[in-house]
Image 1 (cartoon, rainbow, N blue to C red):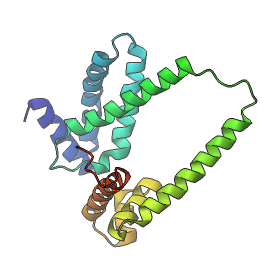
Image 2 (image 1 turned 180 degrees about the vertical axis):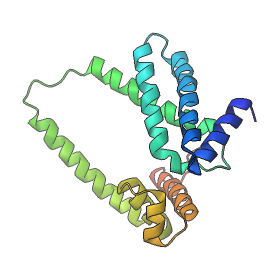
Image 3 (image 1 turned 90 degrees about the vertical axis):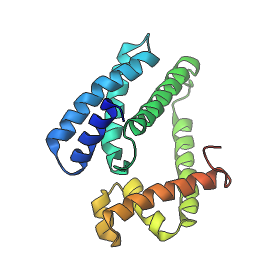
Image 4 (image 1 turned 135 degrees about the vertical axis):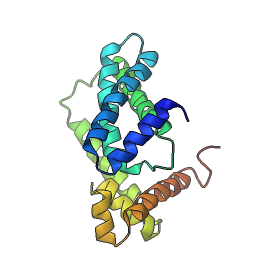
Length: 185
């Protein structure tokens, strides 16, 4: 294991144990690491790179409960950063290519509300296919915004079981969406 990975992993483990100083040190070290990551990918847009560093750090903070100590840390962070970069590039491309419609915006709001209702319905159907040990942690942590500990207390599961339920449930949802195929094939 390289020294950067070892340092990040050790800090994250301590942060997950409640060490605020370790968490602060991790976020500071990640800031520099992510700046370099985005600088290599956005050479002509340093302002966006800084925005993406902040967005990624927020996502790391919000999703820190999903990282498992036995897994490598840096690839987990890079995956989050990659998705933030992809979202940024999509937004930037849309901004350049799609001028806003001339109407008063009511059609956009109606379409958005319809899309949201459809997404909620589809998500409900997908979640209903999962066993409760997967469905409940996903609903409570990912949809309701509870912490892993709060979901564990509500369900009577251990915090580890909640994390594992989320991880396995998300994999099952991905397989379901891919028609039963493994996502890495």
